[in-house]
Length: 266
Ligand SMILES: NC(=O)C1=CN([C@@H]2O[C@H](COP(=O)(O)OP(=O)(O)OC[C@H]3O[C@@H](n4cnc5c(N)ncnc54)[C@H](OP(=O)(O)O)[C@@H]3O)[C@@H](O)[C@H]2O)C=CC1
Ligand SMILES: CC(=O)[C@H](N)C(=O)O
Image (cartoon, rainbow, N blue to C red):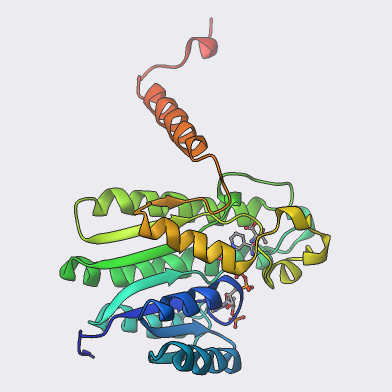
């Protein structure tokens, strides 16, 4: 399937609510045609109608459950064959919060399947096409919980740590090409994810809760500034520089080939 490349298309996963729906609106405002993916067809159709009318772009709803192999394969085909595709927003995600002993293995696997496996497969599908065109942007939505594990977020934090390291590795691989990967790490944002997670939105500290509009507009401002890593809520950007410097120093300190003196036996 090929399409005329005069128009530019963005595919947003998890566009039926929350952060994904705002990405859809903002990318439409920037002139992108849209392919919007999620399970709730009614919501996708309503959003497509709304953004098409508001911004004069074309928007196509694609109903898919990204935990299902056949649905995922359909989206992979779109990503690998649409010549007009310029942006992939890997946003679809779920959280099932709670102590491991109090949640099921199914809860753990559902997070891994969507947050890790689907994101990996969709990225894998689009990267060769973007490299061939030397053009394209992948926006991966991780979380501040990718660098911070709470007693209730072992699995969720693990999935977001994967998104972080996967994105960082891809950025290294694609350095010097026209293909960009932006890693976005939102803090708590007011969306449906919370009530579904087991932690009601109403239980959160309102002062630490961002609106979806603020989150996405900040992330897009980071994109415009050419950021590889965007922390929408962090005012002191030097904190990330210091974190990276400490991480790099720790990694360098591992490359010595001998046990550290404190582990010497006898
Ligand atoms: N809200 C927050 O505090 C934070 C959120 N994030 C991340 O932001 C991203 C967006 O979440 P957010 O907007 O908050 O939450 P929402 O629950 O509002 O949105 C999640 C989206 O993912 C879609 N989705 C869920 N399951 C599937 C599935 N099996 N197949 C396809 N689509 C699916 C949902 O659509 P549908 O149900 O119609 O399929 C929905 O569109 C997630 O990756 C989340 O981890 C990161 C940090 C903080
Ligand atoms: C539900 C959550 O844990 C939230 N998505 C986050 O990443 O902070």
